[in-house]
Length: 317
Image (tube, rainbow, N blue to C red; front, side, top):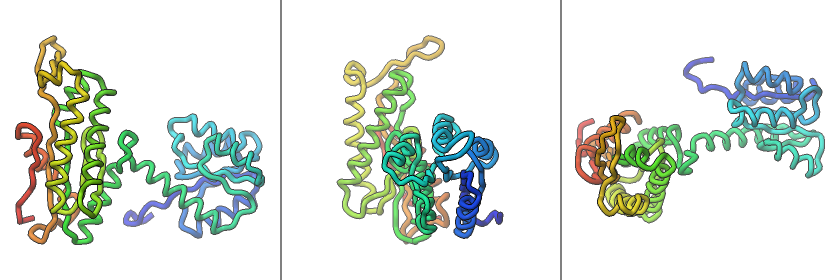
């Protein structure tokens, strides 16, 4: 494959009827997919090891390992549990569809099926799976891949925009003191603060992303950025104060004991926020540069006491 071309999705077709397998394979290839074919569930399991398909079209009735058992095995294996599966069945009864979906299938097609419907179901299932993979399971916000694509789209459009990179200061002290479950509550509190401020902001609706851990991104217009971020800081600090144990909240710090048994005081969490802006005074040639500037400004914010918003105002790219 040409390295400059996007990778084609690989579809695994699992059916013991050679005529149907061939029909599906030909049509999938005509629409730009790579195809692997297996005659039963056992052969499919062997093929999946080698080919790592992006989606499986699985017939229900097959010898050795049938479609339902294959689906159950794929869902039970951590390496294949997220593989999208569309069931192919000659039966149209609701109970058969329910059995397939209960086993773990994402969708189903009843034979005989229309070619256009086949391609539409495959594409929609792949799209849903891609969107699911790009979302943080903790916050429900888009993750790294989606964030990078959003920034790249803004850069290409030439429109004015601001990107804010948000990080919780001393987040490790929360995990060390209270454990990761309480730590996740602080991350969720920041997500709610970001979402609430975005909803209250003037149009257009900002883009929100969760890079991972305690790192978040907001992409908005330059006039929106400062009022929005100030609201995030106010809301998050109020929410975080309620998440500490009352004694820690009242005295304004937590006591952490290190590996040598020495006690240290860690101030309560605050936010460091770095902002890069693309305006007529400064345009960025690519997404990586604007993200790097936002990260640089976040480091500047980290050097300041309390919650701090550092905005890059340089006019030379």
